[in-house]
Image (tube, rainbow over all chains, first blue to last red; front, side):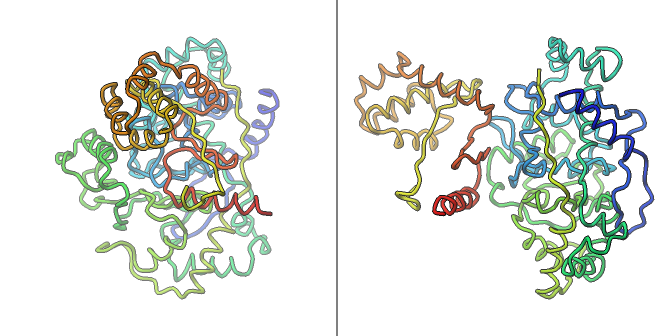
Length: 356
Length: 132
């Protein structure tokens, strides 16, 4: 099985991996090449190792959770929950983002605290309310498994198992999780028939009156920036003491002085301490949006209709980033058709790896 | 269950979390109550009172349910249902399940605590399929 997969990955790499950053604000781009980290070249062996780790429950402290627990392939690599699944006995406070197309992001997480997939990979493993694992222990735990020693040797040349290599392998695997054959890509590449008439009308709203493309542009359909839209707090979780514990823990960790009385999500502010980043969140990708409900950083909206209504009324109360759009019912309808029809690629059939 | 009376059946399996002090004894308690016809009543109390699930608390809940206390306490202390609990854990692990709650609705796996509307949608879809 390993040999077969390796052959497939080889072909994919030669065709797809390269560098691209030629976006113009507001323009949409089709997927042509996948950005890779200069210090972490893709190899089939590294991707295969990353896949094993992605599915391995050893990455969690109590052995109950792997990356797949929250990034379920059948649910668009999310968990379908308003707020993420969490380490047993704890609760999360934010929505799981899809791993699909994460290769295109310049920063990861809702608050952008990681600058690469390599940087991102260790955060959930360490987080007390996510996988709650100790990295020193994890390194030794993996080192005790002969198949892992061999897999690290194949991927990196030696069998030294370090947290950096774990992160590199996970990142390499995640860079293979890319939308394929989404109608928007075919359309942008000149195939007119790739979109239905309704979806084309939706595209016009997306790039015009709906102003979606002002932030959801480029190949990622994200400007990789942070915006305060004043998304309402999710009252379903506001009073949950375990959600509050997660919120205070993150605030405390980020040296937010009033962490004990914090009742809302400060977003990017926790990272930068810039007033302009208060309740600002990174623009998410809209690729595969039909598979990744619920929406927004706290999963407050269960449907695309709710999201479209939110933007149509100019976002949350008191925000200065958005203005009401005044979309008609027909315009909302075709916009939704575009989001679902155009931005959904082939289903990724991911075979469960043999975790040693 | 009331909304779907006569249409669906709920089967619950034990999966005590290995790092919780009282999860195993709580599983024993609910099965011991079940032997006296009060399984769901005890189940509901445990969810309401969690994490106060130490032995003394469990015994007090059994008293609330007016169980035969001698029998209940004996069942609890001798771990009468250990084999059933072990069997359930083995089943979960064989199915590669490690998260609670995990619900199978007519074979469709739902992991994690979900809103009622989420579960209702799946039940309605499965009932529709069954009617075809």
